[in-house]
Length: 103
Image (cartoon, rainbow, N blue to C red; front, side, top):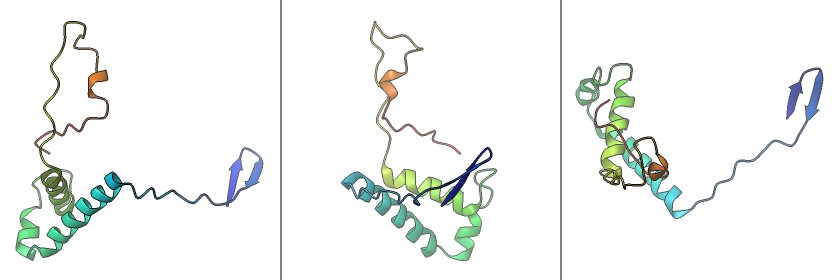
């Protein structure tokens, strides 16, 4: 593949993305496949009912957002603050899933 940097053209091998196939990655892929399968199982009227549910999203995007969150299950509760932590210390949230309930 060729890249242009200023006046230079650089030739490089095309990068091949890694596919770790870790248990966590495979689980996420299965959740996505299950959500897509659920979308395809809907009737045209059911698909149309998702239109406008989340402003700015297509019916498919709104359904997928809902279904993936449903398949993932509820997020863990937020941790309690300790005396040493302030409301400005967000380090306790690193690595946790938190989703808003609405669009």
